[in-house]
Length: 429
Image 1 (spheres, rainbow, N blue to C red):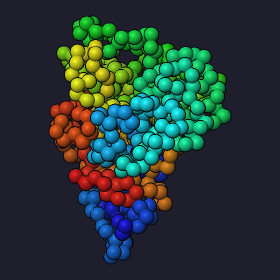
Image 2 (spheres, helix red, strand yellow; image 1 turned 120 degrees about the vertical axis):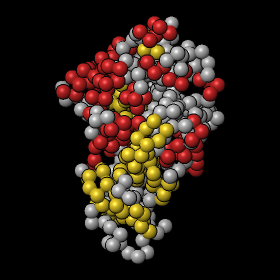
Image 3 (cartoon, rainbow, N blue to C red; image 1 turned 135 degrees about the horizontal axis):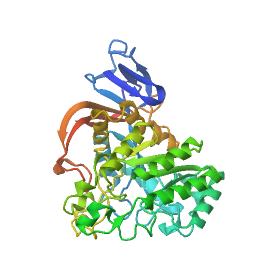
Image 4 (tube, rainbow, N blue to C red; image 1 turned 30 degrees about the horizontal axis):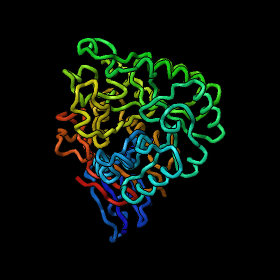
């Protein structure tokens, strides 16, 4: 591979406090050789391939902390190849994949298979989670030590929450010495039993069982109480409720170290968007009230919430085109993550630097992976986007194998133009 140089770009890298117009020089091994305003087409050799970014913005490749992929077992919904195509079109170069596969990733042999399969088929960087509990049953903790050795970046039950206080206490206690990342989907099973939407006016109007805010808050309070005792690495995967934010804020003010994420769906939509039983907007956690959405946005801007995720959960249409109560939860979203997040900037709700930080360096730091920054010597994983470009999401243009987007027809401003992984241009619009 010959040297490349991206020039005439606004470079934003929150981790290295870079926000300046300049260039990025990529060496023949796909590493960043030089970066900044001194890097121009005149400063490189004649053999270097010069790519004019035409004043577009260059950021570290996006790190998506919550992605579901269908391998193994659900390849008809998504596979590593189609996930890669969708992610690259959205500027995502690294993902953390959930263990809710078939079979589930709760043992060394399945994890090893997934890693080898991803290496062969994926063009983005796959960081697999293993399950917190065996079989996702919430009864017995997984073998954290062995799974970490093989390459699990953390442990989560994905769309399930560990209910047993005894099991969670054991998980916190045992994982402390291993420096294990615990990721919890915070929703109490009994309070959310048979629930399919947020509890309130919309659930009453549609005649559907609702999920109350306390279902999220009560699990957060329990886990943070355990965290206060054990001091583990702990991450709340997808906040959705205004009521949970003061709890998180209070524990952080007390000096407790943990992180929290939010799905872009809960920042961009509210329960009214469900309309008359639009099953493509049946999500978990469910869409909440507008006041919840605005509170979550404010928490992102104030960096109480650390990470924005796509919560990419591809589902075939047969699973979504059912009566609302029976339809599967989830939406495809990895390719629209950045564009939707940029709406928060255009609406003057969240600072651009904060958005980029929540999509790049923060998730990379949580996972403890070498990504989310543009340091000299690091892999040239780079996303170039036009912050002003208007576009409309059309079903036929979705690259994910499943087309279950919650935002079909939405008009957006800001689109990815180029995505590099290890210095190789893998997406070019």
